Structure formats: C-alpha cells, structure tokens
Image (cartoon, rainbow, N blue to C red):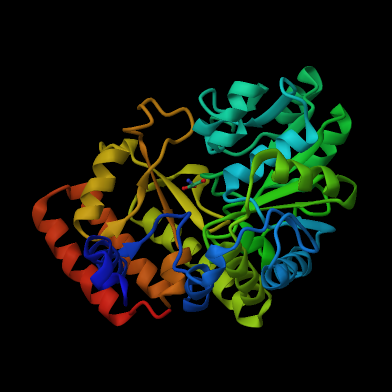
Length: 409
Ligand code: DSN
C-alpha cells in the first residue's frame, strides 16, 4: 500500500481499524462489513470525476464511464426494489430525506414522523435537525404498554392534524412496519407517504419485511446497513415524482455526485439481486430471533417483547444498569453495541436505559444461532454481574469466536 509510506499516521489508523473489526463482535444494528468488491469500487479512481447532472445529461466532459456505473446502479435498484424510479446520488440517508422532503413539500409544511425517543430518526422531525427546524412536525410514538405503533392512534393524529407528509420508518423499532396501514391512513387524511427503510432495506430486498414500494409515494434508504453496500443513500419513487426528486437532489441539495460510491452502490445492488443474498438476509433475521429468545430466557426484557427484524432493543432498567454503562462494559469485552433510548426513557439520550443490538455484521461473518446463544449468555453475564472477572472471561470467549469466524471480505 502506497499510503503506508506517504501518510503513515492515517495508514496506522486504518490498520488498527482493520484489527479492531477483526477482533471484536460488531453488533451495532446499522453497521455491516462491506465485501471486497464494494471496497474496491469505492476506493477506485472514480473518486476523481466530477459528474454534476445525470447519465447522458452532465455538466462535465469525460463522463462516459461514470454514466455506465450510474445507469447500472439505477437499473439494478429498480429491479431489486421494483420501484418506478431511483436516484442513487444522495450522499447519505439524511441527504436522501432532505432532498425528498424538499421535492414534495414547501418549507413550513406539516410532516408527521415517529419521535426519535420512540425509535424514529433525527431526520423525521427532531427539533435540532433540518427537518424540525424547517417543517412543522407532528410526532407520533408507540404504545406505552407494548411499545408497538398504535395504528389507530396514528390515524387519529393524522385526521386531526392533516399533515402534508407522513414519514414511516425507524432506527430502533424491532417490529415490522405495516406500510399498507400507513398508506390507508395517508389516503384518509390526504397526506403523501414516505417510508425511510434505511435499516430494513436488506430485509425488504430479500422479501423478509413487508414491501413499502407499492404503498408509498417515496421510499428513502441507506445502502450500508442490512443492504451491505457502501456508505450512502438512495431515493425511490413513483414516476410522477421522478423529475422533482432528481431536481431536488441535484441541483437542489447536492453538487457533484460521489461517483466512486455510486459505482459501489451498483455492485451492492448486483450482490443483493443474487440468490445467496436471501440466505444472508434470512440468517440476519434468524440470528436476531435467536439472540432475542436467548436473552429473554436469561430474564432480559426486550422492547416490544422480541424482534421481527435485524435488531433488538434491551430495556436495562430491571437490571439496574444504564445504556451508557452497558455499552462501556461490553466494549471492554470486545462486544460493540450502542446505548439507545427506549420509549418513554427516563434517562437522557447520552445515558439511556436501553441497548440496541443487531445481527447483520455477525451474520456476514458467518455466525449462526449457536453463536447468538453463546453471545447472549456473555452479554447477560456482563450486564448482570458488571465485574472485571466476567468482562475478562467474556473477552477471551469473544477472541475465540473472532478467530473461529475470521472476517473474509
Ligand atoms: N445512525 C444510524 C443508526 O445507527 O441507526 C441511523 O442513521
């Protein structure tokens, strides 16, 4: 590697990151390990190219090769998700949401989105985010008793508030989302419907989660979570919104697209169209269920009582430990997860009473149900006993697991 000589400090950090990824259990629900072909495409010379505009209609010369990859990415995304139009240029999920809102709405319009504290996302209306600062936000949450979306309550709020847009989708919601019900609600109150499937895109692509595309005006996603591609975003929509969405992404909100990342998105969609992607996605869901059952059998409380997706959310209150403490103890053992608010959390967002766990990365690594059962025991022991001896023992077991399931790109 040339970088070793040319920038040893950055080289060392990259090498240490490789080592960290190889020797720890990655259980952050929004992370994954991108395969070699994704790293190669996103590390390619396409990073050099300016290509403002869209394939065949660029503001720069020399775009013939980047046109090829962007067209491939668009066509493959359309095939994978069965959508009428795809814009693969958003740099991230947040950028995708900004562009979609501004394509569909005027500043100041009413957006109804799931509250961050109940599992939503910053871009669904948080007061400090562009969404909350530029639109009138009507939040909806989950039921206190079972932490599930109460569709009748959502309808009640929607009929009362008459939002211009309803946003469905979440970052920490372990149950499936009924997009058909959301679409009925949106039609009843005259709102447009946007699904943000950043977390579940891989499950949707594999047919393991209800499909939002037939029910939504616009669907946004990221490409690096369950979809296992490069870090980036995408917008899918009905043909009637295509021109508005494209204009809103460029020139509305972005300049030059990241063509190296778009090349990697094309590779990601090809991978997700292949038969073995379904095996991986089924593994992700099966592992999440196994992890949930094993944790529950150890007396751990789970938000919504389990999982129907790739993620689970632990309610740590009965164990007398905060999310912050649990995250730190688990990290000391090499288990990487994130503290996360639970619905109606009494703790602040930097402390929290919850811990979010996901199975995409460990599934990519080849781990299965037996490993999930073992990991559940390690996690439970750590968060119940909270002592150095337990952490040290778990750290040894984590190392053994990592050696048994080396990270193959
Ligand atoms: N930050 C992401 C997550 O961890 O869920 C969502 O954008």
